[in-house]
Length: 297
Image 1 (cartoon, rainbow, N blue to C red):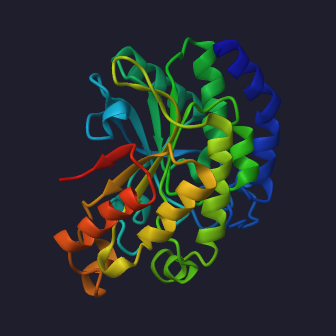
Image 2: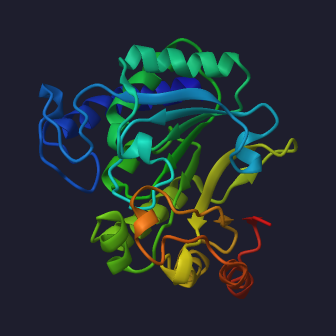
Image 3: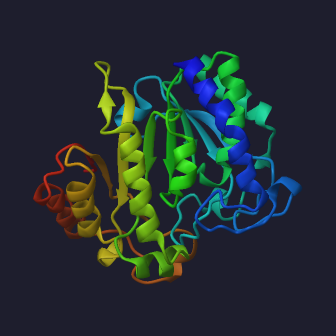
């Protein structure tokens, strides 16, 4: 498997880097030449930037497993979510530039520490650099599965370069209303782009497969954060997954929303989700037959 992945990466890295020359790595399509150090919405040029590297035990159970998920938090983001709970990393861009070789080293160290997987958090704007680092890491013995942990605003063109490379996709589905995506994440076409991306991810890896130890090996796991007053459009999200993706989709229905970043001054986002609001979301899982996944008590 490693040799097959290495061959795929070697075939595709040039095409991925070419996308940085007039940047259309993500659906924003900023058009800047990041190879020459120009920056667009993500404010990053040629080099990747990383906020933290560590074992993470707080992901969904089959991702963290019993030894932890090897998370690499990338700096910046292509979304502008006013309620982002990781805003120091995504919006304030706390982190440091690293080389692709440094990134490969980080993956191998996480593997040596026993990580079940390498979990790329907010990787969308850095896919070419990640692919380059993976090439180095595979040459040096990386073997564990990859998790693509994304806000869900990903281009199908770029995702296709990861076909056969990424085992587990873990995207957000933030909204089922384009106006909410524009108002709260600064993206007018989030709905269309997100749904096309989810379909492509599922085409590549199918439904989530969990081994006898309770650890994810391959497949799609969708996260949906319930927001106050139905802003997230939970019913639309779940209906889409059940009818257009798979009723066997694993859904992590999250209730940990709290006011952060700009949302502290933006009603109704300046409050937590109520028991009633979350309870209604759980009932929708049952309505659409989505019985696999996790709810939060």
